[in-house]
Length: 316
Ligand code: PYC
Image (cartoon, rainbow, N blue to C red; front, side, top):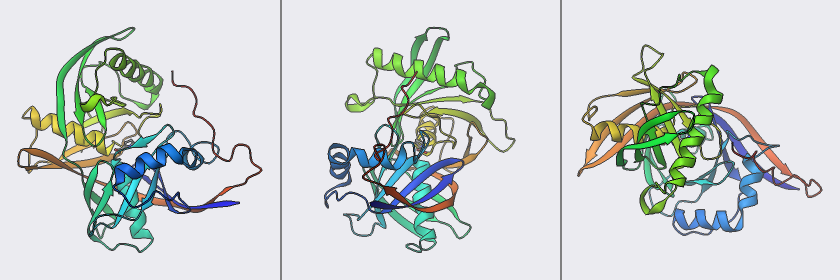
């Protein structure tokens, strides 16, 4: 019987499962090389941890690794129901809270290594976490798409640790009773981007689609809906998406250092974002809270034909 020790948490409603023991040996190289080794040699481990019957399409996994840089509290590789994430904002907040829960870190400033780069994270005495993300930027502004059944809309292509298409002029109602329509529209956007060959830098696929609208909460600046790569939607306001969003706002002169952007999610949870400029680069910080929900040992029984997880349902 293989045993995998995990700690589950949620950040603003979005779940994270941190693998603390029993993960694959990925060597001691840079996090990108370890992520490739994970993908090429141990992908069934990813599926066993996050896919049904143990997980769900919404769950993001985080494999804790020994860092290769001195001064980092941990290395971490994020993964989901279909693959790997260079960075994950809600997941990083979940990892920091989990390390605090385990007593491996104390309140204060720490660093985490991810495949997208090294990020800083502050665990506050209140339990809230601020992550200083990788530098974020807009690659393209006002890309126009024509979607069957939805007409014309425009959006920006931006990097916040993952690639995003961000649209404000979609005309859809961002509310929980409209999820089916939001999923359908964002899938159409993703397919149209692929069809038209519109990508991020280095021809990387734009696999996160974010729609924005005025907030419902009085204390928020905006509400969003974010389609994740495997067909689920982010219950949190999406840390990397909020980073991409503020990078676009800074580029448009609508936001800047010293200001706070409050991003509401589709379920009404909140992240706060600030930015600092570093030699012309936009460096976003995202503040949120995560709560540990379970400590568990996953069991992979060699007699169980579904021990390595089920394939997620086909995307619409
Ligand atoms: O918070 O960056 C994030 C994220 C990406 C996918 C799900 N959450």
